[in-house]
Length: 355
Image 1 (cartoon, one colour):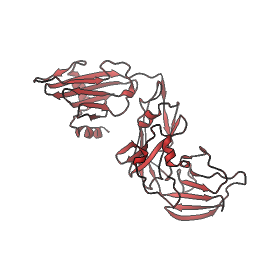
Image 2 (tube, helix red, strand yellow; image 1 turned 60 degrees about the vertical axis):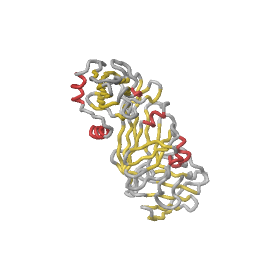
Image 3 (cartoon, one colour; image 1 turned 90 degrees about the horizontal axis):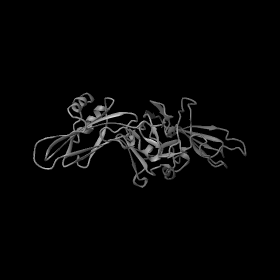
Image 4 (tube, helix red, strand yellow; image 1 turned 120 degrees about the vertical axis):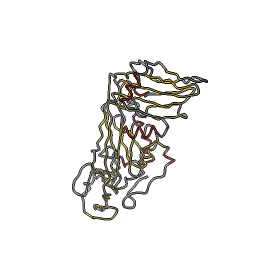
């Protein structure tokens, strides 16, 4: 992670030193005192927020540095000896940390600027607030496990979430192949991600939730981060007809089996819907394999199992607090307008997908 941050910083012409070197650099500066080099012209001014000595800084605000009368040449931020990632903007006149800060933690920042009037160094040491209430999140995905092409990512929170947009913005997905999807809030303690069409078999997925320091509700802060990596196995899709009482199994896009089944008795028929398997029943089967039921007199029942595929994607994306789609790929994910993305090809037998 630290090497990636070094590369990210160097391409903006900014140097980042190790946490050990930070201590030496900070020792050369006294509090927020600034060292100004010789030369004519306007003095470079560096403003760090939170300010030096702050005791209850808001973790969600992050760290912000603004240079006036010059530009930033070096930023070193750390917590507990670990570097803090951030990005430059505004022609190298601004820097902001890339994620929320950890609660109950002491941060140290050293910023160097350069301008016509010479060089300047400003430091800040502050502590984030200690929340009275916290939340945690769990994810149903197992690390380094294989799942079916319909598998959702489901997060469950220990406390009700009202600041849902902030939580969504803290969630990121990296995929080996381009994916378009969306987050959907099912109540106030569950948020779920699914692609607009089924995952492509063989896709490797990495999910990260930078929830430490995120204010999920008024005065309720996250205290940890989540990370899990998984892969999508071969396509296995079951199509069930309650009219013929047969099930067709498609494996890797080809018909594999045509089996007689029971779909309930009259008055207690299996409802229609695009279901997902939730366990491993046999060697053809993993959690997340789609089971599509048609022909039933009973309509689909939401939350009767994993029912993320009951909704068309145009409706599913409206369940996002941001009302935006997620475009993921090898470089991570971004939020975009649903109308601006093109869906990838569908996976599996004809007629299985929804849009």
